[in-house]
Image 1 (cartoon, chains in turn purple, red):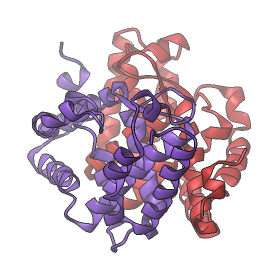
Image 2 (cartoon, rainbow over the protein chains, first blue to last red):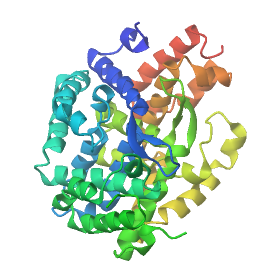
Image 3 (cartoon, chains in turn blue, orange):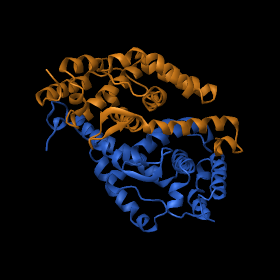
Length: 203
Length: 203
């Protein structure tokens, strides 16, 4: 069904951009495994907002000097692919097998709604985030680990407990944080210790 | 009750920043009058994510040249005060009377959780947004009108219908968009026309 965006008297460029903006509304319906401190499952849109603010406030802890504007953009868009690909639980071995393929397809479709120059910019930012091979992407990826750990601790470890996650799993999964921020990883290690002491993570 | 942030072996600066980040989680529980296209009420955190992306994608339509990094930051934080002050419906005459006072108090408390330099930066950005006296704040404010209008149209005008909003009210409330973006206001006028034709707004 055609809506007002399709029929409005506007440039084709603006039409593509508005259709993309409308499509993004769907990210608000994608539920993550994580819980907010209000003990309900977090959706990916609100996660993206929260983590982008982590970057704004915690930028000084990046190991390497970063262009904060690029980090903000990267985190704003890092999970848009979940509109099609869904949220893959980080401890779901089967789901992780075809995650890259599913997400690449999703990126092509969703960023492909935009005019070519903007599609290219966002694809490039998203691929950089996935590769973790620049100071900006290493720092962004570190925050993408710190944020759910912190929420897990403040929602009584619910996600970890529900899925019987062990200390070793949490450690292995999160230790790459140190590549983006040694300071924040030092704090995260204390989170894991606290979680172990409180039975949120299994021995 | 003290949590891990209060007791962790970290600098006092990082402790303040983490307590602020945790506090922000509450914005996910503040419900706006607006509905998502999935026809549920939108929360303020997901609104802030969506609108910040509007800025990233639609920056070229700003009347004046803008520092996009500053617009992104401004939109990320523009509604944080709602954690204390709640969402004031834009057509609620009574609620609007003491809105400024309630929000100023909220800004002092919430941004006051941060180290002084960051408190000052965010207070300053937020006050700028409220004043609409710079190119960045005029453009950000225009998007803060376009975004709910678009969602209103694509949720069958539910918020407008529920509150019997008229064409004239919608026009008066949104026309300042033109100060930030004449191009987007031209599109918004078509949205109002469409809403009138479809009975979403009263004559």
